[in-house]
Image (cartoon, rainbow, N blue to C red):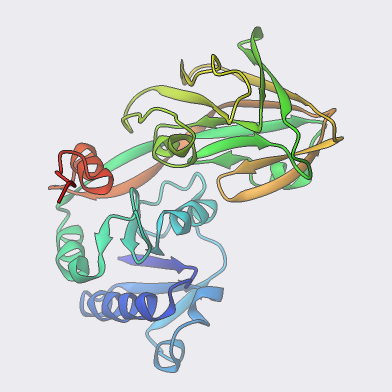
Length: 292
């Protein structure tokens, strides 16, 4: 099996512990191991100098698996390597909440043993594809997002107006700090923190969630994922920010942003005893009595 390993190493001691344990298991399984070239420079000298390890800057379809070491944000960056290649992603959690990175460090050996035996399932996650008029070179280069596309104000405390059309029909002009268009995967991220709904990963929907709207009647809205969403921004400044997951670009107010469902999916590896509802209960502490 040809395996890619990606991480960002924000929590150095925890990450190195996870990598050392992971590498030991992979080599025992006789896997071909490739570290992302920048990530390997953050590891100890023994790992860096190991002849059993190669590096990658880009991925191709010969890879069987990508293992992300970090939190959900690390997986979002790993997606920019996987793109439309269809390589399944495993998330090892050295971060905090971990809706996507669900395998804990102590469970690495058990989880990988099951994965190598084929005892896992694939959860296909839809993405958003974005284009701008006029074109922006950074958006053209990486024009998709797994979690959300968000438009927000830039260098001002004043709100912006986000004129929103669905399939060319006017919906609303949101007067707010910004607007989030979220996938089901992203519904437990930025959108949730702004009052948006939780959406099951296999639902064919997106969510529009205003960020701190001026009018309390501006509520989150669930729309079919077949919808084409067109957005235009007005405000006191001439520019606004657009984020694609963790990547941010600055756009002119004369820019029209068009978002639709991407024509590919991301494949997340889940163990057979994992379910979305169990993850929700665990991460959001649903059903627990916290009064003591």
